[in-house]
Amino acid sequence: MILGIFGALEMGVRNYASTTELRSRDVKALISDLATMHISGREVKNQMLVHNAALFSRFPVPSSIGIGYVGTSRTKVLRSEHFGIPGAVVGAGNSYNEISYGLLLQAELLRLIFPNLKRVYFESSMLLRRPDRLRVEADHEKYLPLLRSLQPLCMQLPASSGCRPVFKAVIDKQGKSRARIHSELLNKRSELRFAALFSDKKENGIPVMDDPLFAGLQANGERKNLSRAVIPKKDQVAEITHDNVKVQRLREVKSYGRGDDLFEMIELWGRKYGIEVVLFQPPVRSDLYRYKVDYGLAQHVADIERIARKYDSPFIDLNRPELGYVNDWSLFGDEDHLETCIGSGLLTLALDAGYERYRTAHEILPRIERRALQSTQSKNLEICTQL
Image (cartoon, rainbow, N blue to C red):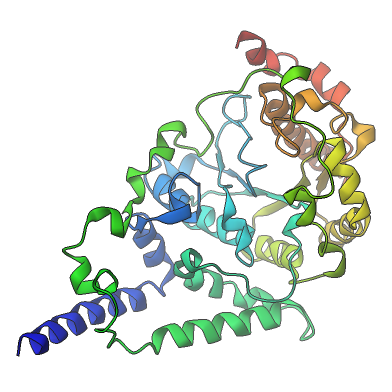
């Protein structure tokens, strides 16, 4: 009898959880749910989609935001407010770019939270070129309703597009999730939802807003503190070799071709919602740059340039040695992050300058040279000399 009561309670709690999951298939409801979720494992202290949903859902004046930046941790170094660009949010993060169409999920969050969003800068780095298969980790599964909402964009592309198998896999995965049998009473106690009500809080993670990560972030997503102006030679990370993990990640990219058509879908997303799309590639240090050249950087850039011309939108490529960024190792905190005050300032201001060249002179591929930029933006960069 006791087991029967326990089983009924367990089924009831799981049924409630299933109903919540069903409700979350509405994307706006999902965003509301994300802002109050618990996080655990690698999510803690790493800025993910769930963190951005929580942070921006509490933004004091959402209607004041017109510009957004999305991308990987390399985009997290942007400091729009520090360097004189008002009305902007940084919606980038750590590993959630690993999920298929992660950049678009980041942008969708911004669009749904900030009603006056008019322009989004999308990091278009080589590692964001993915094969045509679904990529989703266990902690990404809660984002599947948001991911599936992007399917209509895929339907605008040819049937041979790399996005088709990805969204087929999304639908299959969601179907299996809804069809799960809830009778798992023989699993260990901590995995039972009813039992978890009485389990130690640490087992269930922490509320996302309790993450200490938020102590270092401003309301617009950029970090509160600026790094030192530049990195002196004695503190610079040593030159990397072929066995570096960042090099290993590059080795298969050359074979992906158009992959899952992420960058095409970004442009279609912008057209659908009347939001200007600005593609950009941040610079990496010259040692990593050489490996990127070996593993297909030219092909990647050529494809992004093709897409920029096709959709008449700008591509600001700063990852070119002749522009004066990649060879100055003092700008970089490591091999590919401009985690210095002058580095993050140059990246932030270069994107603004590149867009202005597009807006005023219709340059689709604007060249923003470091020396000229630093000369014209010396006043905005003065903050770095005060550190």
